[in-house]
Image 1 (tube, rainbow, N blue to C red):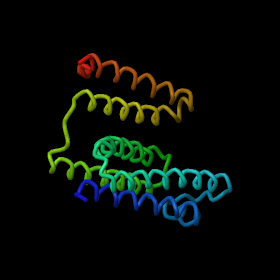
Image 2: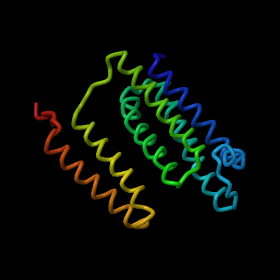
Image 3: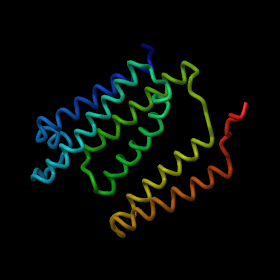
Image 4: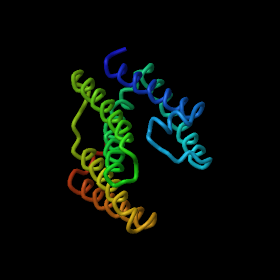
Length: 183
């Protein structure tokens, strides 16, 4: 197992641990995250998201032991988007300060995997994908910022508008090459 796969394995194990904690002892995870509302709806939501974390962690572990390189590459920008979205929640007052631990974990894992992939020369720069990721990231931030003043529909509209414009720009500026399969 190489370093990139090892970073995925460690990240997957941390996520599985977090998911199991949320399922088996939700009050512990609520305390760690600084969430004071411990009502049944909060615990139910935490347990549901913990199940999703458990499943995602298992994906990371399975990808690492099978050395699924493309999964490693896809995970880096998506985890950076998670970092940005999670980090923005704290200054907006949506999440407590402890939530920055979750954001930091996402960033640390993404950077570790990116550095490992780059050191193996298996990470390729593609401007089309970079602009798509940037537009989705900006759309997430825009959606979060629009949530308080405009509600869920305004937030979704902001996300769709920003991401659509970004995707159209990325496609027109850096159209992806389509392989010739006629041969």
